Structure formats: structure tokens, C-alpha cells
Length: 69
Image (cartoon, rainbow, N blue to C red; front, side):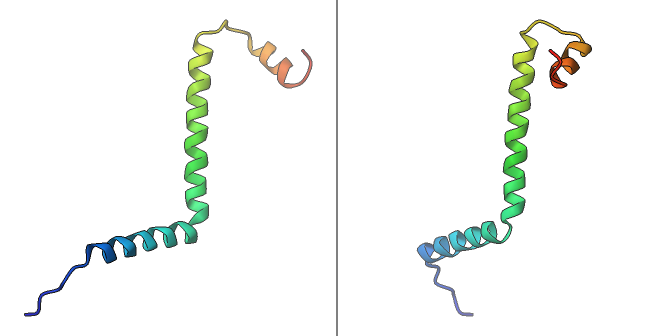
């Protein structure tokens, strides 16, 4: 049986090319994953900040959102 000579540098380069090609071809999937992760981080930060602030009524919140405050 013939043994294979493995060139680690070549394998590393081929792996890099495969990852780059996958990222380019599946750009929207990776974009969506990154956006979702950023949104989750922002929501977590907002919840932490909100835990240390004064409570307000539901009406006050909706008045602000509707531009009535």
C-alpha cells in the first residue's frame, strides 16, 4: 500500500480557502447569525440597565412611544 505524504502547509491553505469560500457562498446566513448575536447582546445589556432604574407604568411607556410625552 502506498503512503501519502502530507504537506501541512498545503492542507492549512486548502482549509482557509474552503472556509473563505463557504463564508462567501453563505454570506446571508453568517450575516443573519451575527446580527442576531448583536441583538441578543444589546437586549441583555438593556435588561441589565433596566434592572437598576425606576419602574414606570405601561401607559407612560406607550405615551412615549406614541410621541405624547
